[in-house]
Image (tube, rainbow, N blue to C red; front, top):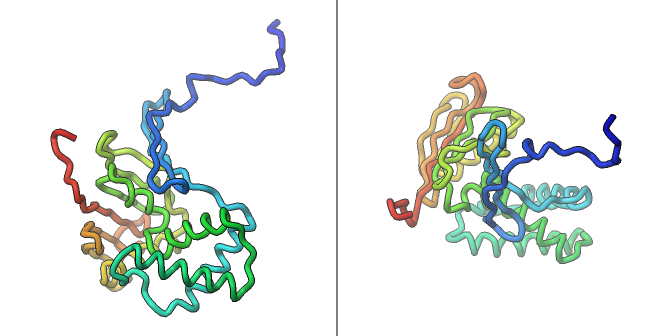
Amino acid sequence: MQEDTGEAFTDTAAVPILEETYPVSPPFSYVLIQTDPVSKRTQYMVVEIPLDSKEQAIYKKILDIMIDELDVDLSVLKSTEKAEEFLKKKIVDIIKRYRISLNESQFEKIMYYLARDLIGYGKIQPFMLDPNIEDISCDGIGIPIYVWHRKYESIATNVSFDSSTVLDSFIIKLAQRANRHISIANPLLDASLPDGSRIQLTYGKEVTQRGSTFTARKFKADPFTITD
């Protein structure tokens, strides 16, 4: 009979193998590339600094106020820097007017998520910022987003859309970023984002049974070459 040492047994063969990790928006978001030792499948893991329950509530409150009060489309500002500067001023003003108590660390974390969701591309923002990513594909609700990585090629991520409402809203947002319109009446769109990236969108279940879908082919300022 084996002696019970009181220690939990860990099957090391089942522990994912960490291939590499690197920052995309430090200190708020990082990427972990890991391989399952059994399936041999490699996965792209987005790791973002978490908000606690208090911070989540404050984020939601500020976001709701921003949506109600925002009198300019942040996406039309000439540069990301100007948009971030404008957004930061608005957030500071809201914090003062509504007497919201935040320390510096809490402010920086909430600012990251507000900028990600109002100026950036929401949950796919880390993919857009990662210079190793060339293509981003979402095939519907509850399906992991796939990316084409310069080193690892086509790999699944830990990011997905689990609600048709959220995914549909995101598709509309992408279309708006391209200064275009998408709807049930016109559910297909091929367009360009302000940075030159190409997007292909489908809206609702009129085209695909799994719901809205999108593919983004990122514009590369430094195109991939044989020497990369």
